[in-house]
Image (cartoon, rainbow, N blue to C red):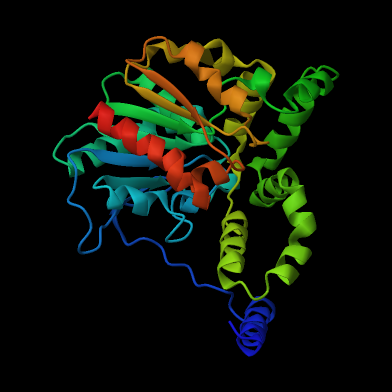
Length: 351
């Protein structure tokens, strides 16, 4: 590329970032809405002409709370949804949408007993009653496993959990949080969250940025040194867009997460207590794939690997690792050769 071309591209990119609409407009994978109710929109991703023929099983993508469903479809080359279409699978996604103060009474039960079971049944029905492969990222994987454990009657063929916290004793910063919580008996945080009706979207976005402080700190230098590299800037922009769309947590849900998971580590002991109810991970009978990231600072790989000793009733449990950040193990360019490749092989074997 000539110097003149480089200068032209750099000037165009600088204008797009500063005054324009951005480097690259979003190009979501085409999808059809099958069900559209609050916090439970179900979409089926559609394949383009020439893509592989549909396989016999649908794959339901399960996002976590406090993250948009676009985590599975960031960009055309960073889209697990597109990859699944390419290999002949039929991907669906359940989208929770915005979480507001009006949703403050929603808890884990709403997802485990209502939202996810309904999404599984509707996905299965759309594919003539075939069993569904669940693929969850972060807390979405935890919710998928708890749903499978609580509802043996659901047509779930397998569960994949990517970067999913399954042992909070191994989570970064949790011992320190517990030490602080002892001073108030754990009531300080829960009281504030109840008063606010949950964790506002703004706080979840700030929290995510804090975990990626090095990215935020070096951002100006990254932009300056890559101003003529449109692809690099487009990838950066897709992450910025993802972070800007992060919703919040309902008050009751976060209260349960704080009390039962962070403080008491129910999930790490294999039995989650919701009131008088007990949900045991050992009741998951479907094959399970767990993927952890050694460089993941939000959910360390060891917290994901903890699920291996808990899922004693599963037909098979496989644990793999992938490079990258918490989002990176799911959607970085390297994910195609690691996480996505593991998933492709796992789905083929469980078929």
